[in-house]
Image 1 (cartoon, helix red, strand yellow):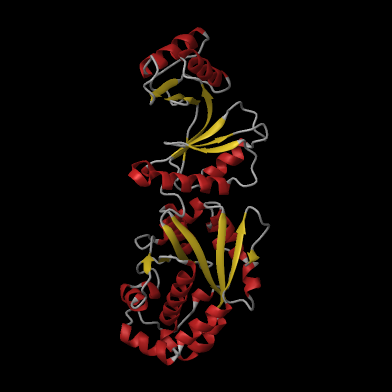
Image 2 (cartoon, helix red, strand yellow):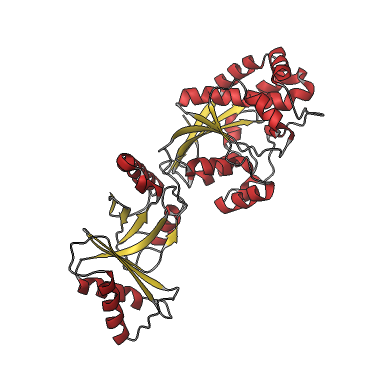
Length: 394
């Protein structure tokens, strides 16, 4: 339903951004841009960057609930609320607060006031007492322990009044920490790893090695749905599709080393994409000991010689924790759909503690550096944002 509630704006507040010192404006600007990106296509009057908040001013066509749902996915926001903005007189503040309380809800109310701007002739206690005094005359019951609350925040620009808060996901704005190549499979783990990377401010560049005949087929598979779900946390997606048959044609003689050789092949390919995209890290969904390629020995052997920084945000997660996390971010149901994932290579008796020397020997024998170069030539980036319908090759 369109916005008809009488709220003037959505007030977004951040946490750790506020302690960034001289870099604070940079982080707030990133957050504002990300909110703008996520709200493309929505109707609103203005998006403004303030010292301690970002606000969206609503118009008569704003779909408040839909916009709130989108804002709740933006990393960097600790909490947000639909709000009324009124003047800094005690009369205006009390009238606005009591107007919100009259608009709905039952039971006693707790008044929470904060006077951030000291240039008024009243304090927080006076705000609370004035609202209680006037509200009691109108039959409103007040209780300092009530779960139902009305909040007042007095600033230089006016007083923000709201009767509910929603928790954001916190973290840092996407892009504020740079870029990272995310090794994205069709499974449960890697989308969650991408989410945690975004939450720490990394802009994801996805790389998916597939088993389809063409990149276009892969781009029309469930991978587009996974990328679309992740796009809800940033507003745009760039994903490289790479054919896996090149690796398979070269790796035929690697035998029991095929699985770990493939992992090293992925790392090498990701490092090349990272260089192309000015990305400073590679993100993977690996969890220590979960499968044969993720033992300590194999992670050490496959990652040695890769000069790009690795981030493995799920390294200490067990499978149930990963499943729970994937459900929470909305990718689990997509990930469990049937899919022929080339990452599910079934090597017979794979080594669980490959040495770098043995892996390098097999890798060199199979000429897998050549496979990386050939695959890179066949990589194609696809993008999607709110200005496009579906993923488009670029």
